[in-house]
Length: 309
Figure 1 (tube, rainbow, N blue to C red):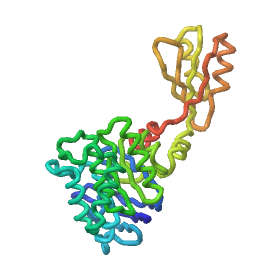
Figure 2: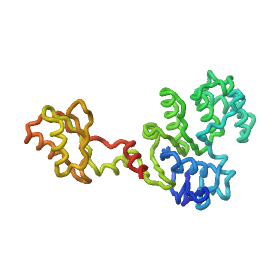
Figure 3: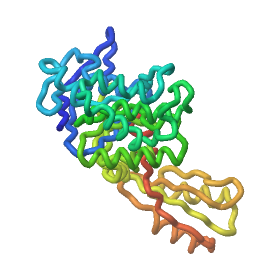
Figure 4: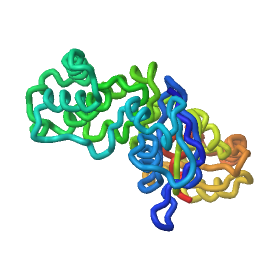
């Protein structure tokens, strides 16, 4: 099922938590939804799941509008909110049975769905324990199981790997990628490496507005207008080298990488390169250039650049 978000705005008093946001998520796509705290991520996800209604605009899921067909949309969405909706006094099996009944799954199919979720989410050894007795990681797995038990066509996950150990994170990532082959998935996370490893496309929201949309490679490429070089020089006075690098015609920012050796980071002016100037400078001064490496823009750098304004 495709998700079409069409010019939605959500206001809380005079504040616009989401401000005229539009985007499309195609079936079989895993979309990473990024943004700093308070950017509008959770509000947008709640609007998609019909948990709240926007003041303006519309969202369609599989052609159904949140205004006209919210019940049809809810039946086709699995939602794991950031605050995991668990009843801590219930055993895992009983909780999943309760959720299956809420979703209207036929009685003769409930047991099979529970067993499938127990296996899929790695809950075999914990299924008879009370949810409150589980670690946070296993509670997160139970939350994922409740989101999947009715076999929804759309999955909305708000911080799904919160509290998991590194091995569990890898397992959940693989599970989400597998699910994404057949379903539409929106994944929100503060862990940028997780989004990059899991998602086909990334959307960045800041102050209620979409500020970037593309694959991780496309976003990095858009931010590569400024060349960043890692430079190491043997011999010579560090301060003299630093000053000479600053004086290069295409050099904009120079910084020490380490105070203990002769390593520097040089950021060139937009759409220029300092590589040849650095090489010629070292030849002229008789300095031994041991490293001259372009640094790839990281997703973290792109995120900071787009959300610091």
